[in-house]
Length: 327
Image (cartoon, rainbow, N blue to C red):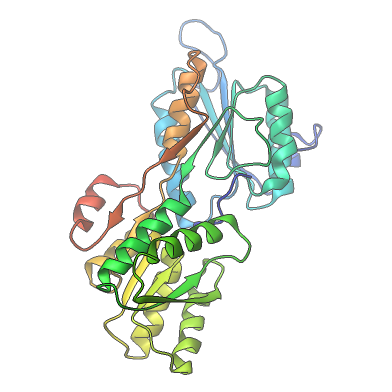
């Protein structure tokens, strides 16, 4: 998935780059020399939770592309914590040794809170992306609203079913904030459709294969249902593949993320009904960092990015507007 996304914490000074073993670093900018002045460009550093899943690959690509447009203003460095909170803490500590002018963090989990607080207490503006931490010691948070997206999906599903039917919900990761928010938002919206029943299905960890296996098992139960609401697109595709293999047709399927070419292709082919974009915050994060370097403080501490629906009707338009989708 888009993986778990919440607001989500340091270490080793002497670890420097070597201490970030497993982390992967990419640097852009002119390498530190401002044209004509000989002065070193300021550093904008980003500690990514992970760069592996399709949503975060798009996240990174958009961020690097936006940073490249500011390569005369600052150096940009990105490192991947590979979903390891301890590695991310190490990355942040290493960045602190380099004295970045702005630090961006997409927390692996709340365990990195103290590391973020340490940076903030040193006077470094901290921009949190996608996930939050258990503290108010940060400059700005940028991300999507999972609960609002869940509500939008629930409203769409209720209308799609004409206000009557049974929805099987394929859930993300147990206990994860995005899972809870996507479920709660959906259930809240579906209350407007008293003729619609929701079966709260198993947790499939946002994984395609687990969702496929779960759907295969569910079909064997013989329980009737009319539609599938999956907490991400990978699981929506997994559910569809199980239905297809069993020869079951005509089920509405709705997912979340809209970061893959594949899901849009499924929608265009009529295999999946719709998905809702979980916006990536990377480009906006870089723009806010650039503004901070000019002394412009964000007007809002929390910047919520809007979602949009993708259906067969607007799929081509969506593709034309979103050229960085994961392939």
